[in-house]
Length: 522
Image (spheres, rainbow, N blue to C red):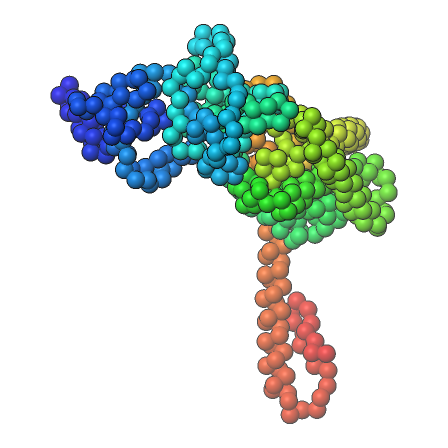
């Protein structure tokens, strides 16, 4: 067994040597070496640090922030960070990063900025350190073109640099390795030139995949609502409007996550962000209307009004438009004021969506959601109390058996549960995850809440369609249509045959009586 283990190690070293990689050394712990730095024994001298030949390798690729390899000319690299603490710069310390590109540009004057950063040690102690005393890695590839910066002067963009070169991004609690970020000076306007980390704008597409599945199931719900006659009333129409708006909202979020519209597009990106905002607000307004209509129905208020659905449409689309107008005006007026960047909606700031990475989202995005959910919960409680009182009266009047009472209780529980889901209990998790993300760096709970919220299409399908009475009604409807079609085809065929046989006779009204009804030509 021991011989097998040593053979495996030797084989791994041989393979690594053939491939050119340095065994046990991360690509982002290396620096590019030149032939002028090579010593006679095969070692390299790099800025006063001796790199043994065992820590030198040949590379014909570079690694980007997402782990993808990009082919480049064969070159020599040395594992410098094994012998000295390193800090990664995007490029030369006297250059500026080009926005929207994987390159840097020269400046006419010498850049003067502080290179002292706060570093958190392994024991939790924070110290100030001049990072130029470290080994500056300036020849690694710029991580990505779609990069953004983290500014510690903005409390919503705080970051922490650890002794092991890990960078903690506070806005989502993610720990970034040197693969995902790099330091570079940047002109911060009134704050002067500062050395700040630049990171890549990546998203976890897990929730996007789940939202795609949700969209499929929501479409199935809409189809069922269109087929069954008991869903064609005002309540069913309101539910269908809610489902359509939910599909549009998920589609916008998926599009923003995948970056289908370039964030540098000053026309399409803000347009998509605004239409997405309108869709999500309309979704919550239709949710409010659903519960308001249920409350009116159970209390026999205005049930006979035929124009209810028309009035509901006017309210929803107008209220959503007013909120969008107010939010857009705030964003347009104060967008140029840097001191107001934490309090404006920020359409298209990070993605083609409203800025959900600062507390401003609580004012323009999660704030309206919360208010509408409060109204929804109020109508739900009032409706639930009405149902409870009505059922208690029925139990007093109807002396049923214990088994029937248990069945009725089960039915009531099912109805309450479905109503509670429609009220928007799932959306409460969305707001809770946002608040949790602002006060905690633990992303596990946030991801769990986002997954549940994104999968609400599947949950709604389960609690509204996968019910015995709905499935039975759906099956009866399909079978009834099938039998009617077969009867119609049979009747038409019989009449056609009869008409042909009587072509020579005088014209008259021809009928054919059957056991199930009559078929008439005229």
